[in-house]
Length: 167
Ligand code: RP5
Image 1 (cartoon, rainbow, N blue to C red):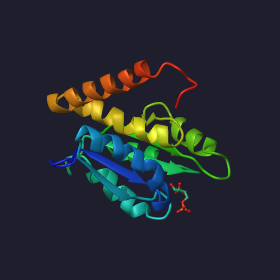
Image 2 (image 1 turned 90 degrees about the vertical axis):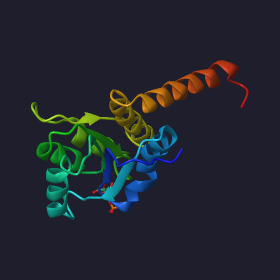
Image 3 (image 1 turned 30 degrees about the vertical axis):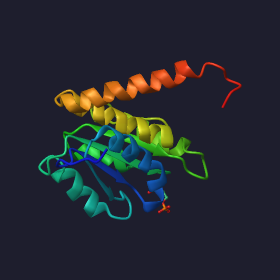
Image 4 (image 1 turned 180 degrees about the vertical axis):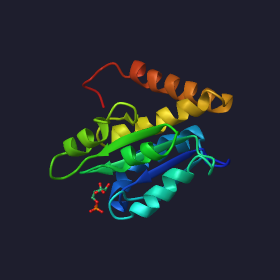
């Protein structure tokens, strides 16, 4: 389904190399008809851009931010420090430490500055897209209906395929 309205979700990531992971957030939002904006914003390589993005995100009309990064993954936390919008953090799987570094640097926020941290890798990105859609669905009945259909289809696929030996 093609998203048609002004994006309410911003999907940012520390590097182009994060895109194969973060594309899973885009995939579910495409399916649910949720408009989103995507952009590379690096906490370490483009710190000024990080600041201007985070500080202007609400005025730009975004309702929720999905931020993915790997390694010393400071992007979600730094964005959360500079915007009142909810931030969903996706730990990208790193080569050196399998994403444990990403996870710990995103999840362990100090009390008072919140990041909703998802699972490492593609499942986390997918669920970030799902959660962002669920947030928008609180005030958008069309998205809510598509979410209900998505869940019903997912359930039906499992119910229709109970034998684990079959493909
Ligand atoms: C982080 O460093 C990015 O989020 C990425 O996961 C990681 C590696 O970046 P590249 O060296 O592939 O650009 O900032």
